[in-house]
Image (tube, rainbow, N blue to C red):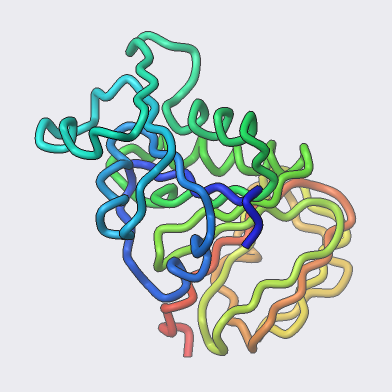
Length: 216
């Protein structure tokens, strides 16, 4: 994997699945506050640890003594995760894996990360959000393909009105579909293997559950 790939360790829960290990293999790592707890489980040493450290457990604060810390005050204008992403971009990141982004106690943080991921994708960055068992990828005007296990679940959540939406190789395909903003029409689809998405205009997130076969 290219050294322009960075994994940002965030504070949400993370399951050490094969898909997660594959996604972060060969990447560089930056930890955001309490997300450092995932470093030991992954067997990695981040090159930077940023945050206000308000969510870092006391027993973790003394761990990884050789990792440079970049502290910020609690009253700051950005989340620890956004600061970590900015540091990765400053170091040449073009692909970003936001690990621990899709679960946790703070739904406001999870929602903001989804919105931020779309914004980053609009700037040309390749983005994956993951909890290990759930993955999210921005969908903008153009085409993407997700390699999902057959019979696993996925959904498309529109952050705007969507026009010209095509979903191929799924149980419920769509052709040149108009999705009104807020519609649940594209929730809980089932992959038939590699799923191809095409979007004419709009902003969306594809949320996939590659280990969830409850739709069979």
